[in-house]
Every structure is written in structure tokens, then in C-alpha cells.
Image (cartoon, rainbow, N blue to C red; front, top):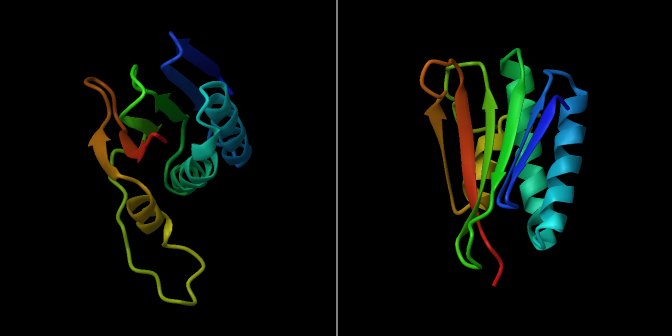
Length: 138
């Protein structure tokens, strides 16, 4: 883990090297942060989807992978989860055959989240961010 930013308890962000261990570490820190925020009930689905997106970044991009969680200030709303990498090309959802070993990650994100999408990197930088939202419990 390269760095952690935690601002007023509603945003947490990490950067990971493009290393296979990043997936395990990302799952761990996301689950821990959700527990700290009292959102442990979102842990399993959030960790699964983060794992899929970080794995996609490792397969298709080189360079650091960013993970960011944003919790709204009030009790209602959605948890925003973002995974960023330096590859500018957006991910392509595909239909996997029943015996394919891969190709289901974006379908899983689409079906398990309230909404999801991609956007280009911040102004002046390269890359992209894949994001998804999960409804907060309650």
C-alpha cells in the first residue's frame, strides 16, 4: 500500500502497486474501512466487486491502482466505490460462455450494484476510473 487518505470519516483512498498481492490487500483494507464506518453488512458484496475490478486492472494495465470509498454524510444514500488505473481504455463487458474461466466481472458489477460506470482520468492525467454505487443499509 502506497498511501491512505481519510478525510473526516467519509472518504478513504488507497494506492496499490500493480502487483498480484494488491487484490488481497485491497479486499482487506476495504472490509476494515467498512467495519470502521459501521457498514460491515456491505462488506461481502463490496469486497467481491473491488476484487473483480482490481483484478481487471492488474490484467490489463500497468502502474498504480487506486481504490476509493466515499460514504455520504447522512444516513441515507449510496456508498461510492472507485477503482482507477493508468490505462485510458474503458473496460468492455462481454458475455462469457458457460465454460469460460473469466469474462463475468463487469456483469457481476452491473448486477450487484445500484449503478456503475466509467470515466476518464482527472484533467491532465491519463487512465480511467470504474465506479459503482451500493445502497446503504437502512
